[in-house]
Length: 414
Image 1 (cartoon, rainbow, N blue to C red):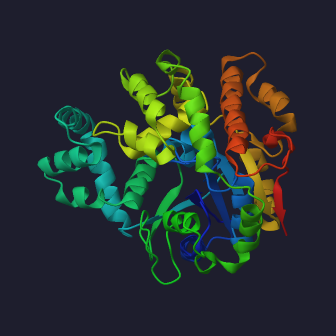
Image 2 (image 1 turned 90 degrees about the horizontal axis):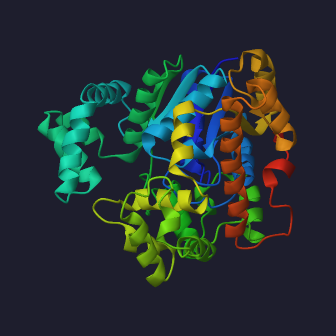
């Protein structure tokens, strides 16, 4: 069965995603669509609007066949790590093609940019760091350095967020020596960060903004995905920024010293976080008080997500070096089940549905008390903590077991 892989967040699933899904299947002539999806915390550091199971139900209703979670250390990280984790997950699942959206829509243009960044990586990093020390922010510094090296075309491509992710996917494919064949489809309608809709297509950012303002959004979502989304919103099963802000304050106000061992908390940032927490009036205000030319808004959001989930620098460094050590199956259709059954013996990572048996499975796979098993257990603990914390961010909670990865079943579609 020819399978196309999609790297997704679906926050929430909208008409632009449906266009990408359908075009991916059509252009690749794929029988199966396999999505690897961020869990409860996303690439830009924000908690998802609704939980990973609701987003899985939306994806399956729209026509995705298999939904697998990208482990937290990769899902909530910068583009290179996000891309590496997602590519390794799709490779482990035996997918044939990786199809991603881009503003460019031209694979060779993106490949040229990817090769340039790889060939000049050391020079780019050194020159960018120098400009950061002179007061430029990271995007400005990187663009200026690329132009200085005579690559105006690459600089233009790097100005768009989906292009940046696409280039990161291409570089990850190269670094992982993945057999996945890349393909890109031009993004249509509203841009990645755009808050204005174009016809019936609005970005996920725009949809979340409309919801926050109490505006209707259903015209921007495929009809098939609306029911699970509305049910989640109506029962208060969505994240609440006031809850997020209070949880972050509770963690940060334990004191600067308690923050120093956490991932990406550089020297001096712990004091800036503490001072911001003392005065902030909400989540956005907290981020605004911390961000600077050195620490962009996206980077601050990721640091706050790592801080909330107690991600130490030592542990995250080990996770990122190892790559995903297991995969969490969130949902599948009947066609997806046939695909996984056919690939069962060739899967290069453990694929686990309900986590009730995950500990013995990891011990069998890696050997009880082996370094690999201990690392896999530590990665799992981080993911479980993220799920528990996400239940504290919800507007309302139904009183169920917060250890949801152990009690939620794989979502099945006929």
